[in-house]
Image (cartoon, rainbow, N blue to C red):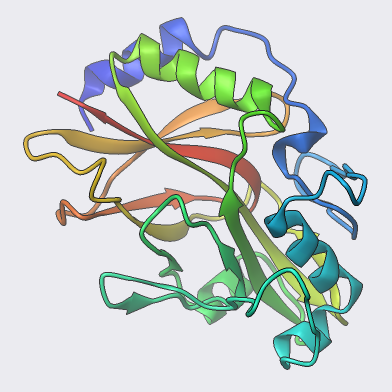
Length: 238
C-alpha cells in the first residue's frame, strides 16, 4: 500500500470520534462477547432481513445447523462454506455475503485456534453477510468519510464476524488478537485495471483502519484482520 494513503487516513479519519451503533453486527440473538465487549441488537420479526432470520435460527441451535438438521423457511439452504477463485475457506460458518464474489478465511484452523488460545472443545466460526446502510448508518458513514479522505471509490460493503463455537454457543474472538487472513472476490462491476484495491474496516467504537490488499490477483482482495466484529468495504484508488 502507498505510504501516503495511510498518512491521509491518520490525519483525516482517525482523529474523528464516532460511536458505531449496535446494528453494526446485526445480530438477532446469542452470546456476542469479543475484544470490544458484548454487542447485542435485536429486530422485531417484521423487520428481519433474510440474513438476520438465518443468523437467528443458527443462534438457536448452532450445532444442529452445522449438521444440516435445522430447517429455515426463509431460505432454501444455509451456506456454511464458501470459496474465492478456487480457494475454499478453512473455517465453517455462515456465508451470506452476496455483495462480494465469494469469501474465504485462508488462515488454517490450527493456527487460529493456537493463536487465540481456543480449548479442545472450541473451534473457529465465521459469519459473513451484507451490510445494510439503513441498519448501520454510522458504520457506513465512517467508511464513506474515510474513502473521501483517501480520494478512493467505495465498492461492496460486508459485515464480517470472526468468532468461535464452544458447546454450541457462539461468541466473538477478541479484536486485539493475532492476524487472520481473509480473501474476498471482487465483483466484476467493481473490478478495474490500473487501480489499487484495499479494504476499510470500522470496528465498534468507531476505530477505522485501511487494510492492504496483499495478493496480486486483480479479481480478489486478500487482507489481514483480527477476530471480532467489523463493517468492511472494498475501495479502489489510483
